[in-house]
Amino acid sequence: MELYNQCYLIQYQLDGLNANCTSCDVNVNTQLAVVSGLQGKLDAALSQDPPADDATLTWYRLELEKEQETLQNLQSTRDSAYAERDAYLESSGLNAQIAASKQSFHAYEEQYPAYLAARQRMIDAQTSVGFTHIVFPHGSEPPEPGTLPRY
Image (cartoon, rainbow, N blue to C red; front, side, top):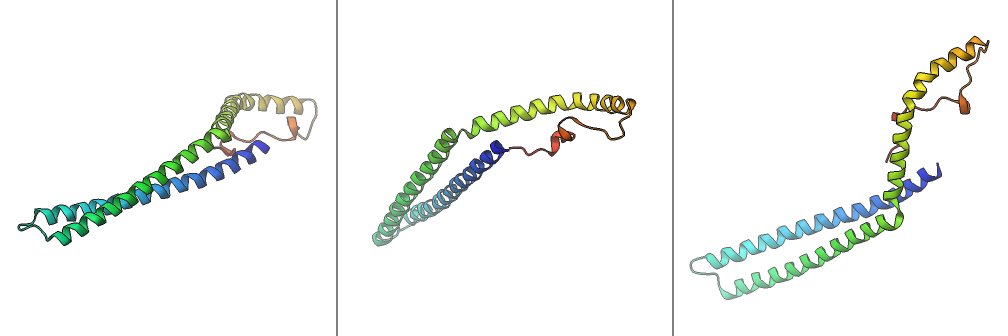
């Protein structure tokens, strides 16, 4: 159970890091739309006949430059968020713990049919010697594999 709790806490922290990455992706995509829109306006202003006045073109260029700088900052923040998440995955050992957990579940699932096959024989053996209350090893029947928590 301790391993489960530890994995749960690590997964909770990872979910926060993933949410940060997703938020950064949204910010970058939004900023890309802003830059694209300004570039379109600048292109339209340049393609007019006659072209737009110099003050308008200068304003579009300055705004475009400012928004491109913002985009670069957001991309840098996004890259840092992904690097932080990836470093956390490596340092926390979460991937190894999840792999070990999946391996344990796989082994349990492989053994469960053998238990089901032996279960009735065990009950029959206990009732044949006069037991009225069936006793299972470890005090209870093992749970169905589908009812166990998974990562």
